[in-house]
Length: 148
Image (cartoon, rainbow, N blue to C red; front, side):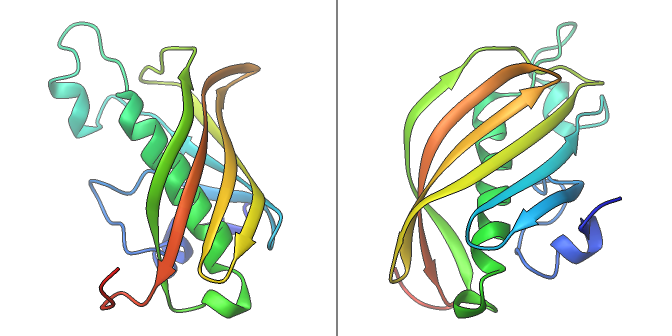
């Protein structure tokens, strides 16, 4: 049973198809951690060109999936409701496993540090027991119409 459905996720973050890379939130501990699921299907638009005959989810889109999970974690805190979380930096990104159609990507994000409207999270994307990607992300929270 999910904590948040795709429809509920879309009330929190501005991403929509074809750039919404989140199917559900499985666990949410506000201010601490979040676990989400992305079902990777052959119908994803990016598989048309990455790579024909050998479909592989681009690493940058795995990072985007993690950033979306981080956004949900951040925006579920009372102080940031109604705001937008922007990706500010990607550090220590490592790609360890190819993600293909049919894989279920489990996204885990843990809050490391938060100050004012900025923070850092530690992220892991896994397929089964194997880590596909890990990274540290920095975010900035602002109103959607603010210049940052």
